[in-house]
Image (cartoon, rainbow over all chains, first blue to last red; front, side, top):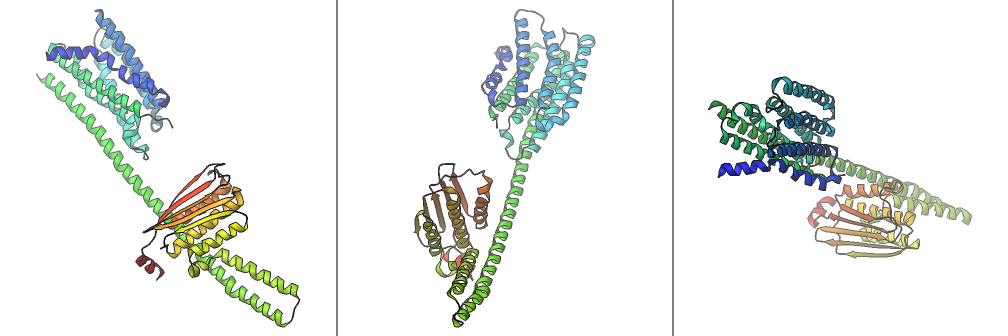
Length: 215
Length: 253
């Protein structure tokens, strides 16, 4: 029963992204550049998720989608975070890391983890970089806004959501190729937990979008 | 089993650490906000005390100059007037001395309204409104309750009303002024309105007068609110706490 529910929950994961995207489109006029770029990241996620889901439904190989998505995801996130006024000084470093990461992803896909395997190496590196940039963003946001409560700032919620998702997923990505496929039920539980983290991330991003007030 | 335990414990630990990090930033920011507000409050208090000190020293100096004019120059002129009488001088010369004496009295009174201590705030305000009426403006002034103001408050209110009347006469093209001052227990409420052309608060030419009014109110810790837009008249409402009779006696002592 529990595993059946977990399976159904997992099937819904690609559609979770629609929730923040609806808020995103409703709040578009009030969003600043950073929030709009985060929306771009969500759109890329949605396209990758739907394509992956479509291929899975028709029994086709879909892991190659993740390889391509990974190379796009990090530059989008870094670009969005370095558009926060207090984070602009990190932009050159972000461009450098994005380029380096794209090269790393290509090398990883071609020589280390072929496109028919889960690209755990890339996901671990990406999670570490994204978690670090989220921490940096939270430090910058909390130091640079002394007139408003932090909970009223959209990027606080967005950074928190992304931080919670990526940091809690590091071990799942890291060990997924080695152990998860060995025990089906454990696999199901762990990926359900991952889906819950995705859901939490999107809820927090949606709260962030709803907090946006254009001056 | 070790890799599974590592996976579960690692994932849980990372999730808890992320949540703690978020919580830490919320608490850190709250502490920073509180500290920032405290610093801002101290700055405001310092600014208010500076304004208060400036207003006090200005008034002290004005009072000294007014007294000098009245006691020294005024007395000398009076003496000169008597001498002219004794010498049976021409009436033109006597008239000139009289004009100078009147001008000097007016200047001295503008510098410091000595009547405040002798006749009280209500009397002096009525005098100001009489001057406005002389300029063709209809005035409706009302005074309710017994005013328990101290001398600093009386002087500040007098100066504010003087500034407001001056603004109305010089800039507003108003036909009438409505004024009321009401004292209830330890609070005093002041309302001033004219039916003139109103003002743009950002207009720098009238900004100095408004700044002067704000400084006066700030020096006596009064709250004031200006409601005006171009073409819609001008209205000011102010509230201030007045001392109890016992406190007033201490202030005067």
